[in-house]
Length: 445
Ligand SMILES: [Zn+2]
Image 1 (cartoon, rainbow, N blue to C red):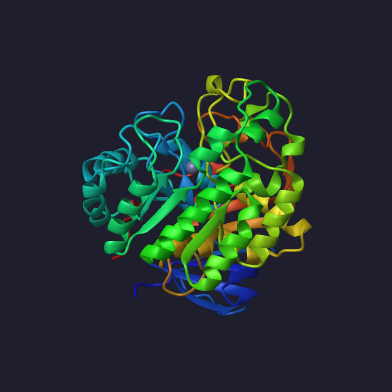
Image 2 (cartoon, rainbow, N blue to C red):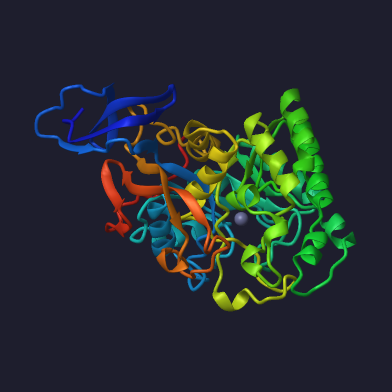
């Protein structure tokens, strides 16, 4: 191993065994050792004394819509990865839709990798897409390095990414399971959605009624059944309906290979607070009531929900019309997920160790990123440095993502990200971003 070239020292380092004062040494972009706080520093190494700021593993966000190429005016790799770096995220996985082309063939994956290569400020990997028409492409796409496959069970919002019906779901899932892959699913049932009242306009209650909990519950129930039948590995994206938690808990208990994520907006924002016409709060499934949110936190606490990821899904400002039925759905929070979740978590009695488990360790594990997700010798030297007791008020002008639309404008949040480190290089410091040094990641074989 090469020489230690960087030393980070903090009174609060979050390790898999808990929080402790430690000196972390870095060599060749990897964590070399965790030493006692007052350990002697190797000669010649750069030393960063972080004082009482907390050293966390860099966050892993497995649910980001970068939209590049094709809808780059919505978001691109340059802006998205800068926002992520500023928010303490060191790895993101890009969703296969909203870019043109979508990531549904090996050629399309290469097109996306070519676009991302010189723009990535953090490490970037890709999910593939499972469409009714591309079952034959799934294996080659997996071999080309995607981390798994995303499918919709109801319309995705873009015509180039159609949903799977139950028969197509079973066929794609059987194929993916045949080579040991993972299917990640937008779980809303199209029949339940079709039966819900569809009233357009600026009132949030009408929009909420159009995307009922039953749509999520029914889709998740069906997904559990097919996963069980095929002994497949599945992941529920962006869970909002807390009614589905008992189903998921029972499936996990039975040994069904299912994992679940939720998102900062479901866990920190409520339907009750959405102003009329405020479609920066629109996403599908929707933000639900405060009581639903309380139950989601219980699901996190008891392990039914595994991860918290952003589902950062931006668009241009003009698509956020004040009519909830017609506005583009998607919430942009790449830069704010950590402070938003920390603000709510601390109120609910959780520690930063929990936040790190939900936002770094568990998403890394979901994607099989064994080099990410923990401060441990041998892993990549990816870190976020957080001042957990400092507060700030969200000013959209300070966000690095392309269109500065945010549901968090004006909120005062706890937790200021002081710096972010990728493989031992400081990529963000006090809001200033370095030149891109991110790598393109492929699935570990
Ligand atoms: Zn999404």
